[in-house]
Image 1: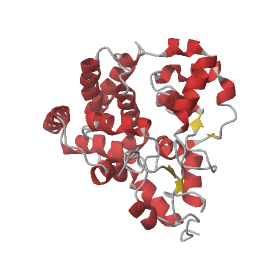
Image 2: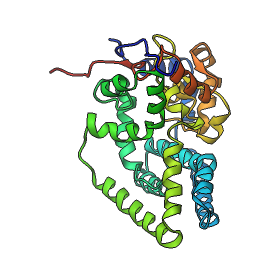
Image 3: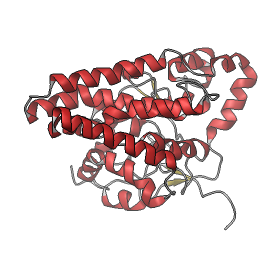
Image 4: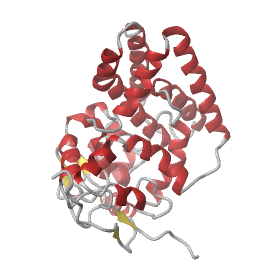
Length: 321
């Protein structure tokens, strides 16, 4: 069973535009009041600050604990907090912490939210993520799509299991290989601030606590229930559909990232208000394929031979050769 090969041998190539821009236009024509949901959530910064301070407190509490205890807490609690902070950085990349009028405030707050994650991601994530929205499915610019090498190497049930575990590494390093961009000054600042914070953590609490932060971040991006959203969002579980929403309880700790069709339709709406989009325009979302469980998504991705790294919709890159 674990050696069973996936049934697909290539990605699903389409020659249509990504669906969200056209649906956004249709929905706004019918429900212009959705524009009132645009903008930042004033409570967001306090929620994120509370999560960062919780990690600071846990570092102090765990400073003398053994590795098994640290790894257990990292998987069950610390990694979940760090994963939520990554999704806070996702919100910040859309300028939803302080609004589009204050980009510097958003960037600085992104540095702050990044601290417990242990690895500098805030600026680099924004650089690639906005193109994922603008060019969804583009063979070059959408770095969320696995490479051919990934799809060919991890093409069995066991291979997909390993791929899920290693997903944080593919997610982090894939853009550097497939679509490299020169580093920006803000990325160097992000790196400098993060290295300084990590050094302070080691000085105050030792290497094990830094390991608690970093290993928690990595584990919660791999074989972990909250990491199910990486696969649930755009992997093609039903032919022809490239974005899927999840309306379950884990949205409560992930800034409603499960409302993913709604998010791609209206990236200017903060996560806290995405349920309102669905409530206002239910006929546009209720009949779309959706997931009920991120854990089930991980299981189905690994065990179903019809799903795997190839199960993504792709488009030829825009422009002339």
